[in-house]
Image 1 (cartoon, rainbow, N blue to C red):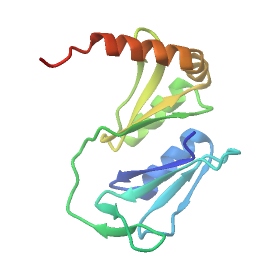
Image 2 (spheres, rainbow, N blue to C red):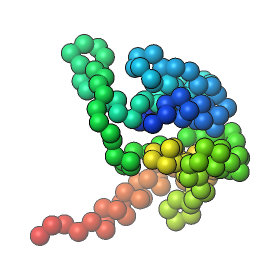
Image 3 (tube, rainbow, N blue to C red):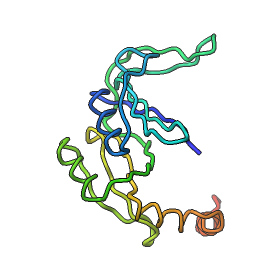
Image 4 (cartoon, rainbow, N blue to C red):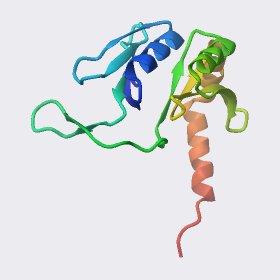
Length: 162
């Protein structure tokens, strides 16, 4: 289970407020780093997404906390994404994305495994939003047995180097 994650953003406060709206939670400054904010889901697991200035990097520190430093600009896209639950409807999530000027589109994953709404935060970072209907689809698909079967299919399709 993931309790919290952080994402780089051009506008940490705006992004935190928007993600909090998707969750039905709230946003607040995140004190460890200047300019950082957090979207708080308000659930019983303490789920948050920290939104950092896009040029903030974390490196190992010699104490208990990582060291934060500011760098140049970052690439627009990365391999990072996460899926989050929302109590909102697909239409509501898409409307929030449109209001923010961000790509927001309903997509089907895999071979009709489950649907998500791709909400591209600042048109850069992918958050897959799952409505209650989509959460049921995902939970029906995301079983250890299904993941084992997918892993076996992937292993069988890998050709050994010669």
